Image (tube, rainbow, N blue to C red):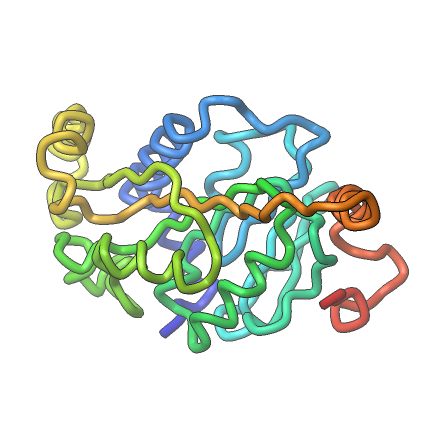
Length: 250
C-alpha cells in the first residue's frame, strides 16, 4: 500500500522525518563515497525529494513518483517530477547512472515488473540503492511513519529479489535502530547508536539499504562489441518533445 504524497511530505517536514532523511543520506554516502556530479543522471523513484539536496546538490536529478502515491507539482527551477506507472516508467532505456528508491519497493503492486523497469533504465554497470523497511525492526511496526505501511523485507528476501531480477548485490547496511516513538530530544542525544549497531546488530535496524549493480556479460565478436558500446551511451532520460507515455523506450 502506497502512502499518499501529502502524508509523505508532511512526515519529512517533521523533526522525525528530518532525522530519517539525515541518517539515510549518511548511509548512502558511506555506500557511495564518490558524490554524483552534474554529468551524472540520478533517478529517485518513490519519494526521494528529502535526499537530493543534502546528498548530491550538483547531480542531474529526476524524480519519478508512482501513480498510486501521487506527485507534487514542481516549483520554479525544480528538477522534473514525473508521475508514472510502476510497470512502465516514462524513461529511456539505459539513461540513468544511479537510482535511489525510497518508499518504492514496499509499496509496489507489481514487484518484479518494478524491478525490471529499474534494470532497464540503468546503464551497464549502473548502480541502485533500494531503501526498504526491515520486517524485524521497530519502524515496520509503527503506522505513524511511512515505513509502517506496505510490505517490509528481510535481508534474505531482498537478496533473492535481486538475484531473481538480474541484479548483482553490492553493499548492504542497516539504519534507524532507535524506535520512532522516542522523544525528539532523546533521539538526537542517542544518534551515535546507529553506527556501532550497524556492525553489531544489523538485523535490528529499522530499514535496509541494499546496493544493486546492473552487470551485463561482456559480448564477443566485433559486431556484438560495437552494438554493446553504442547501447551504453547515456541519452536524455526524457524526450523534451514527448509525453511520459511516448517517452517510454522499452
